[in-house]
Length: 568
Image 1 (cartoon, rainbow, N blue to C red):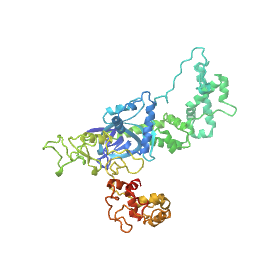
Image 2: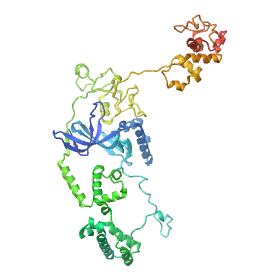
Image 3: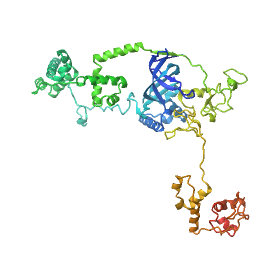
């Protein structure tokens, strides 16, 4: 029995075929239906075999770049078998959700975000463990780097320079360095700074009283004073002090210029009520994916504005109320479900007649047998197994042992590369195995459609000869695009006679009686020149015989001796 809770990653049985590998899903919600059954809302993970060849190339390029950035690359130390099996451990996260019955869950597994600080080889040492580093969009057919990656490496950490010695000049470009906004060693005391900040808050409250839009948003004096006490007012006051070299009289005059008091607003005041409602709706849908929030809900806002509003919104009572509502709602939902062990026999088990399992000398279920015509396991090539499973298209009659079958169901591949595993085609059409059998787009070797009768379009000897003799008349490219239009033999004969090629009056002196223009043979003779050995004569004369057979005339003058026949 498996206990699956929220956030657990589970292996789910494929709903269309029992021969397909398990689907990897992460549980987000557990809901009870009206009939009493439990349904799970899950996030989908995809395997390499589920996405197109072009995206696989993009993923491999991304992995190679990450490997090159490491100080001690490990990819070059891996064997071919390890590289093959690591491809089965790689998954691609998606933002796609689906609901499925809890009875489809077959077990638990672990999926972790791969980062630059760990060795990818460690995943082969852990059972039922996968990793991912990219996010797959099944709708747009795109791959993106996961937003939650651990940013470790020279791209994110700065190199701290050595400390300057006393009296040593700083030759760095000061315009490219940070700007000082506050001096903790300023001549003002803490009491003087606090008094200046109180004056700045009072000026901000008075400025909101004079502003018409602020009067509507903060109709009471208490609300205006609370808005004036926010961080934006304090930042403006301290920045004013720093710009005026901490001179209180000069800084006070700037707070109230000739045009009236300065009004400082942050994002909480700038946003309208409708914009705040749209932001909460977008946050519920996308989480903290601010790029998607801006693109789909608030395109007129800058990314900086949205992020700043988010962290200010988390300090409001509205956020606290929503958090309490979500916590109460989560308490009322299911948090865990127990899945019994699945013991039903798999339809892919190879059985003998009368529905009984194949055994040796009446031995029990644990005995090893070699049913299925003595064919070895398609993955490990063993000849003995406690149970065999049919795998691949039925016409190939492939099978897997117990160990390789479990590996196939868990990881979606074979332990070792097999002849039945074809590298992914470059096209977007159905993939095919080495035996030209169409496979499912999901990557299963099972046939997803009826096999069609293969045919071969073979050119006749006349066509092969004519395209060498009369290229201008036939125009090969045009003829290739019209394969059912017959070749005009009369025009070809006329072209040959036009160039004074030998006609049918020049007869081969060594030809037997059946080589006549009027009575072509029904079958080729054993050889054309009786005075020569058959293999030699056939090798030199068969081409000219074929031409004579179809056109009725020779293409060379008749040889007068065996030497001339060989030289021709």
